[in-house]
Length: 481
Image (cartoon, rainbow, N blue to C red):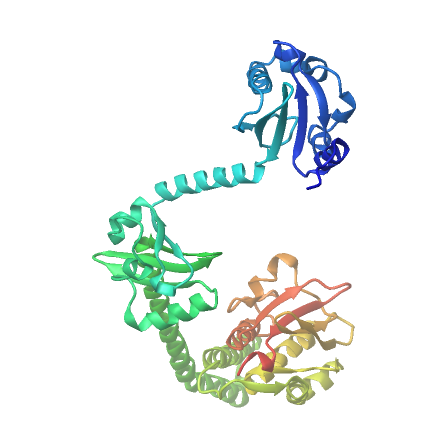
């Protein structure tokens, strides 16, 4: 059988991926050991061409080897193996020398002629993994959550490989070795079993809630690599909060419904007396104007104007309360047709003010057409109403795609809305003008109510130059079945 010569052996050692150095111990002093060879991996490990130091003593190569207590003890161990001839591997020794930048296991093998081979194996990954496992185990033992870990193979019949003390108290697990099914025996309703298995097969987490005595637990099963983890968290307080929120939401919805019904009834019933007041004030002016002095006529004018404004307010309150009542179901609506109808409804006002309404390229949106007509009509009417003195009103409508659907911009070049009032104007009965300004203060409140019923949002932004930009975000028809 052919044998490797010395050159072949040296070449083999030089190419090994494990760091190797060979020392010769000519004397009884460990510091006198001399380097015989070092391979490329050892050079890379120490960050210097150690192989160039062949023939030099350990004390010359490593200054701390003869001063640092840990290094001295390690050096003595290497020397003992060298002078003892051939010997078994001694070690391992874990080293965290900062010069090495990690953790290494040092192993020794005695060679003939008072020589010793020193091997350094990188065990940084294993040490870090063990440390992470130690930290995780400590956390698992201290957290107030029951944790059970089982193998992923076998589904619910997979054996339990680990659990924490909370799992012992809550689920009665005594020793590892049972199955996941055993841990779930009193916690998984039969009707959820198939869903849990489907989620596990798809690698998706599965959650459900389980009541025990007066406590509520949030149960979760999820797959993590080669294992399945079951956890049970006391969610009693969260369950109470959710129940309280549900009750509060139910009461709030009922209160809103009652308020809307009340507003509808009151506004509807007030229309008849308001019409009578307005009619009789007009009749009074026609028949008895010649018998009233200037002050009487002025008072009568206030009554007539007040009745007209009250009629407008009652009409708008009725419109506000009717949003979403008795309307057809939301559907695909062509916005261009909506704007055309709104412009037709306002044509007399547009002609009166000399206003211009421009729109093009409007998409289809999701909503109720009569509501959207009222929305657009209110916004255009505001642009006609609050225009700058001496200027012809201009209103422009455009649309751009947004992540949530369509963003509709309704812009005008009127007096604008102060930045600190842009939220306030959407509240009912809030007006920016004087008390006797035109309008009831419900126009934008109605707009917001319509947009919310269409699952959208509305707000006002600043605009380059004079005027107002109202932004309406509406969903696409494709976002709804």
